[in-house]
Length: 235
Image 1 (cartoon, rainbow, N blue to C red):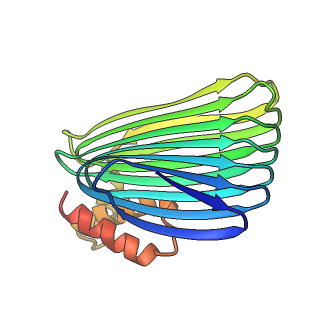
Image 2: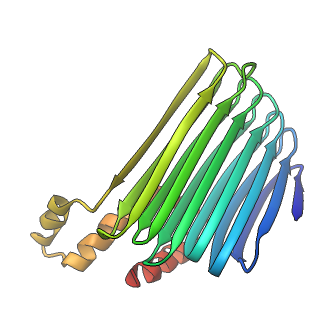
């Protein structure tokens, strides 16, 4: 188990070759900021559990990418333990046939005047499960929390379970959550083909447009898009 103490503004970029279960804790101290970018790959079955403790006035900006994994189970717990703490998190996961990705998100608003924003997207040809839980404690007034999970199925054999939900005990909150599962729009693909774009390239463009929100702020955007493109060729 690893623990990181974040006391200033820090940028952490991790490319994890996960070979066994992994537990990491980030303690983001009052007024500090953590920008975390994490890519996880594994050829077997692995569990990643990450805990973020966000103190007063601290900020977390986290981006997780699960691109090439046989069976990955990722749990992230965000504890907003200080007033005016903020968390902005994005995630992207891709699964091929016979691959599985589980994402469990626990966003715990425990103090007043905190905000959180979540956006997770998946491109699925195998199996995926997403469970997103926003918990707002009764004293956590003036909370703002947003959670979105969107999934693109590549075939009829792909399966997605998506379950974002809210548990609210305060009465002064602004909260929203949503989930979608769909396929590439055939009309949009037809429109592009009428303008000389091949079907393969049209589908690629549609998928790139779908995922761009999850990688646009990544400092390794070019490398990440290349990894995603290589993965999509195998799906």
